[in-house]
Length: 325
Image: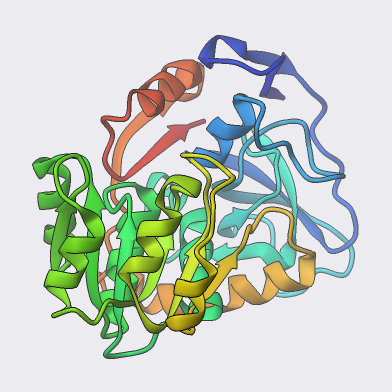
């Protein structure tokens, strides 16, 4: 089969196409013939050398695919050859075939194309686990999403609104903020020319928000604490702007706040399986009812993978980027 690897850390030029053996299907696994896969920030961070795959994961990048089951391993029940599925991976998605534990499969609704389904597993599982499991978001609470126009932000806006939350977002341009409000965000903050913490105080009448979903990291730590309400939670899921910062413990204590750091990729199978179950519970009914946009903004062919990474690196994209195999 054809597959892509990163031959070293660097820009899109390090992406290399190779011939590989089709993976063997172990007990409990299925083999998927890939129709499309999503391109995620984690893929880019791995390419840059700052987010290595966990022990035992494939050296082939790619954290989510959609396709059809080509083979079923021993002990697998409820799935058969030909089923249309999406899957959450620890790696291996940038290939024509990938093997995955059957517990990490999502059955694709009949009304959903493979290109849309490929945008689902990583983003949806990340958002569900961090908003509702780690972040304990409930109806009537308020949420601030940094990077609201990206793939994670797009999904988070919609799921939080469906859960009855008030949603605020940050983004870098009026166009991106307009996109977020079209998805349901209640208000947007342009971080290029607005003070985020001050704007949150204005929007919440001085109270602050109950939950912050942050992909930025160190650069935003202090302003995030300022923007939290008493009893608020800060969930850090990315380190785009650094991993180290000073923490004002006095402010943390005064607000009785919690700072939660999570990743999805390296979790054990049992935890990932439960997250997929929660994702199916929160997301599939909305998809079947046509009430959730997966926001695939641009697709590339398999031969254009380097171009897809270049486009991602440009920072101009909105929503998800998908590669068709």
